[in-house]
Image 1 (cartoon, one colour):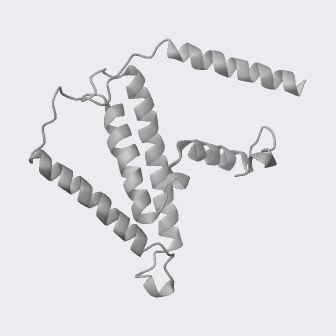
Image 2: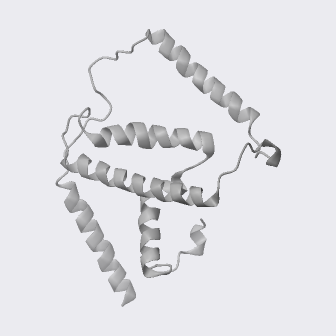
Image 3: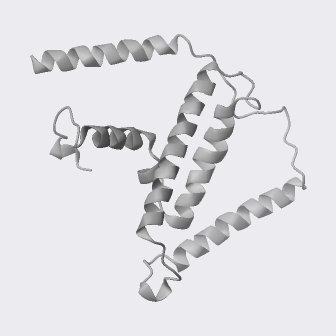
Amino acid sequence: MGDRNSALTAAHALIIFLGLGLFVTPVSAHQFATRFDAPVPLGFVYIGAGATVFLSAVLLVRFDTIPSRDHIIGAVSRRLINVLRVISRVGFLIAFLAVLFHGIAGPRAPGENVATLLTWSVWLKGVALVAVIVGSPWRVLSPWRTVYNSLCWIEGGEIRWRRYPEWLGH
């Protein structure tokens, strides 16, 4: 009976997913104008991009080890970290939901759609920049993990449909 229910659940999820696809309209996310206009000459843009990649590589090679206690500048209290973690999780979840809603119901013009701005500048570029500076923030910012942890907190324990297969690893 359990396999039948899981097959029905998967079929329902597929039907809902495909049904939502009927309401999606195309959005152009890569091109705001027909030509590229930078406030500086294009050669400077290329030099800046190359220098950024070069300096990033040099810094990654130079500081590729985990710092010891000798390199710690200061300490932050555990309570402050927990408060910042909750604020970051809730804020990113709200931004994620706004991207989903505005991406579906918002204007099609990429310059006017919040989904374009948040996806490209904050999510893909901002999260990557934070990852380079302090390590991957995805463990904290993941909207799926935030929803799951919230449900676990409400239920008072771990929620799972079935055991995670060991052969899949982490």
